[in-house]
Length: 228
Image (cartoon, rainbow, N blue to C red; front, side):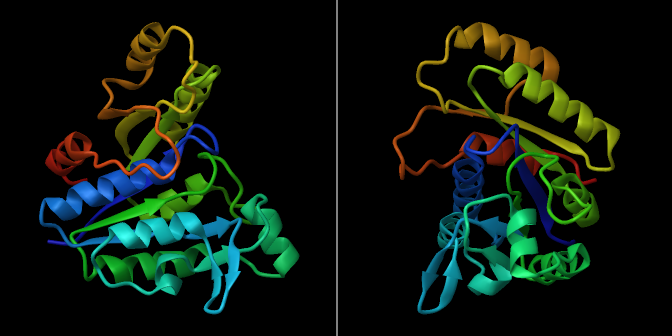
């Protein structure tokens, strides 16, 4: 039986996708799984003696247990903190979704789970024509939506859910991420999100930067889902 995959997307940038992805990886590793990670495209990276390194990709690698190289986990890495499609254009690099698919399958051949983290939101450009939704569809893995709990999240969540529904990818569920500690009427907003998206797999409280989480409840529920 092959590896199970998950594509982590968000209602926007800065909503906690990496926190959630790492939390799921930690929980799956703790449950005894071989877990690989993939950050296909990343921008906003640092120059190091080993080359460009993206902090989100490095955090994912630190949680996984498959012994991957950095290049395997993050095949497209760009320095400026701008939209990846612009960074790729400026670097003269064409992002190849087929190549990303090949890398995913190489990781999956050695793993029980592969957690893939997108960049930006569901329709964020990933090349001249393609968007993140196209990448998730090419990988043929279910999509987990991270909802940043802040003003505007109801509209963003509804639009993203509708876009996922209209495409080829299956919806695995959602996790709420309390990115705004001053978010007004959280209970009422969560109730409405439940009507739009269903019951959340888990909720992540507001965290100080660098605070790790282990999303055991969400990982258990994802692990119990029937295979597509």
